[in-house]
Image (tube, rainbow, N blue to C red; front, side, top):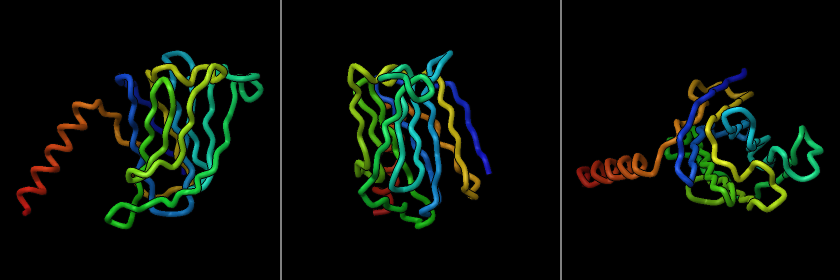
Length: 163
């Protein structure tokens, strides 16, 4: 199964993307962070324990015109309260990209002078998901900080009403 999304985005200096996966060991996902006319970078998860970050026009340009950094994830992923799904949060700035799950940092790559386009702001987001059967595999739409704060306030009000 091959699921894709292609979205135009307009983010502030801090980009946040949320990806929902089935709570399983078998995940594969690629998030392309693009400029209007070329790829800036991508984040790829090959499993819950390994992945890579690609920076276009980086290093020796020996891997598809850029450089790939392979990484391992040693932290345990946590499923959501429903036990069916887990959520990956991708936080990107001009200085770094971080992968998080339920507030725990799984991996962080800080950008240096040889990291090519990785520092550039994302204008177009493309995803690719494979080997997953759940219907809602595509990432949640990116949200600006104000929208996130509104949602947090709504959730807090709901919790207060319950008490």
